[in-house]
Image (cartoon, rainbow, N blue to C red; front, side, top):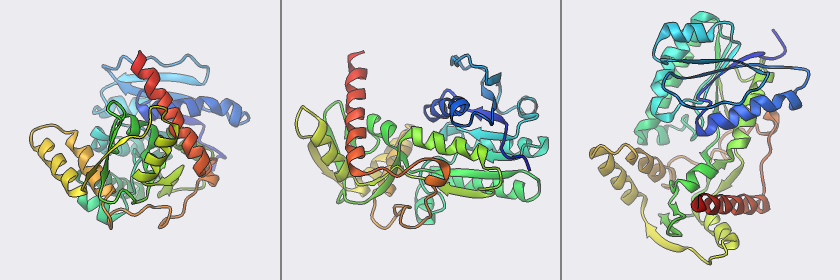
Length: 320
């Protein structure tokens, strides 16, 4: 077996996480100078994304991700595929997995990034997570009958993105937070930069993580922990708190989905994530592999600094 996966294809490099993964891939010229990567990117035919000019980027494939012939051409001679596909297109990975296995790809990193989809209580309660499980089961089936192996990275919520998008109940525009139930339930959150680095490190460990979901996390926090940090760094003073229940949030999400607003799925995810007894913080139930993948758990002081940076990012974006 080669000592690393040299030829890497990234799907979804223009997305929120994909941009961080691409940056981490390009940074390997410094972090792994004796193990150069040949990077290819795959994007939809209608994408207008601009990518950096870099000697490590060999190809940019633009086409129909549902066309098996386009996929086969893009996947040829690739050692590893990293899927940072949109969560709204998770099932499109099934064709990708099938084509990758047939074409001789050695490893497929699934677009699993997020909550612990091995937690049946959580997966059974959130319809979109059932798609994750469907893709995971399909990957296991395909890999059992081929030489390809899959991996997946479970990282909890993306801290920066979910806060700025008001997905965890924090509304920066009104400086109001909806606290669900007690607000004390601990969940896993990660910086996207950490997740990207951990994902890319798999390229350099071909003998590990075969047929596995790996668990990483930057912080384990509750809504109230986030609120305390915000009140410490927000110069405008304490935030307004509105008490809600997870049942209220679940009903809100169901109503939105019923009206055709698929963002209601996000409400459903957070309702179950913050509900007691559903989806425990996986740092308590799984083995974290942060250090093995080159990242570290971060402490309370650094958490406050990260929140301070998010507040600053919001202020800068608001002025544009």
